[in-house]
Image (tube, rainbow, N blue to C red; front, side, top):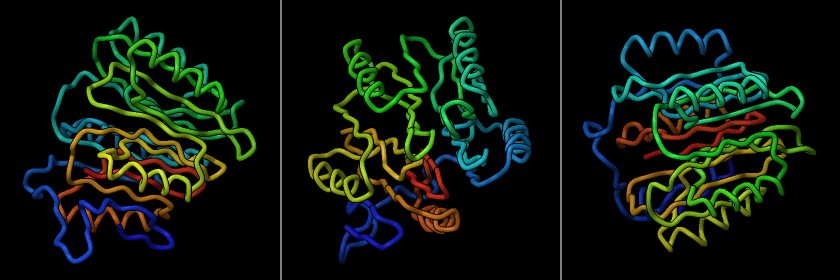
Length: 269
């Protein structure tokens, strides 16, 4: 385990003291494009350009006055859609319309106070039951998760928004793809890191991580046996770019990126 003052966590499977990094070869990784800290107009340009080039969005994030980050991968099903700049009611209308169209939200993010939040989301054509909730307080989020788990669903997308003294959550639950999982929320950076240490040796890793306006972390942890991965928190925009460049050379690419208050967190595989 290696810890620095700014970038807190990386799996020891990937970087171990006295050992060479273990990672998938660059040739084996799918073609991908990632961008971050771009404005709304530039985000729209990126969406149009990448769609024309045959890419599809894997993860999307909006933060800090509508600044966008996303990761796109080449190929895959063309039956997807991406929306940005939605209000809470606009997002709900999109979810309701998606049910009729046979599409579900697979990556959702929001930023801003509860009463004027801005949402962005990726929708994908897929079957099966799902639940989507937003504007949840911490206790409401916990209750919604308990209810979803009772229905056989797993937390597949989550983000925290609002203000430091009024954190809200937007989340999606879908059929469990397999394996044990659990979640944590409202954890300080040190608590999140302690959770990482406590669970890593038991085979769990973070697969979704979100940073809230108050600096706390929400995470989905899964036991899936993947050996080559990395997770970093508390990065600046330039720090995220530097880490991106470093890990790209090791054959890893980000599968989830999240930001709020100028702090980035991401998961690479």
